[in-house]
Image (tube, rainbow, N blue to C red; front, top):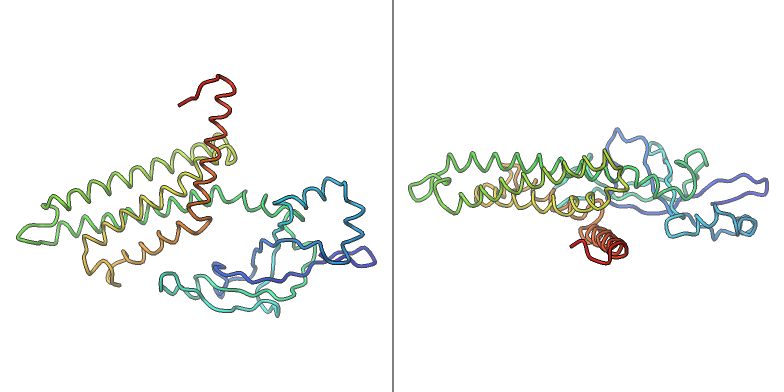
Length: 284
């Protein structure tokens, strides 16, 4: 942030961001950037002294208050450099996939800020709950498609004189996969219902839970489908290998499993403490 002697304000954006989804797509016109504000610039000194006790400044100095979301034009912007496209487990999604992007001394007008300074986490959290439900919905759909391919394979392929579905081991894979898909579906539906009725904030525990559990459940289904297909499951003849790579990646995207497990555990501990305080006994 830079303040001029006339009192006007502008911002200068610098940084490097990889896994920028869609950045190299020819249709991409604008980037949404979550940036951390740096108030150490000399021009901010007077401003910080005047607002030392101001509520706005306290917010900016908080753990989350220094983050801001800005809009950056992508076309013909000399400050934006596409460093490279990124592959996911070797799969190249360019130009529609992910890219590493360098942002070099981009001048930002205050009108390009979304909501305002220090509101970055507010903007991000507003979409993350619904976005994580959407991730899970797509995962369930993908796993269901792979499950159908697995069933079809067991009905067409023979080993040792029998169709695959006639072998006890294959029957176990089918049963486990059917159960995993149904469990993932019901967990996601329950979370979406809680968000509709209570709001995303009060459904944080359920959002964190599905973000961990659903990718694991659906990955197991696809992994079984790969096993049933044998060598065909790991080559380009079927979608299985790519589906497995995508679902494994989802355990990192939008926050790794460990972060969501931590969130869920702390929320559960908070509930337990409140229960003990109210009744003197654990709800468990």
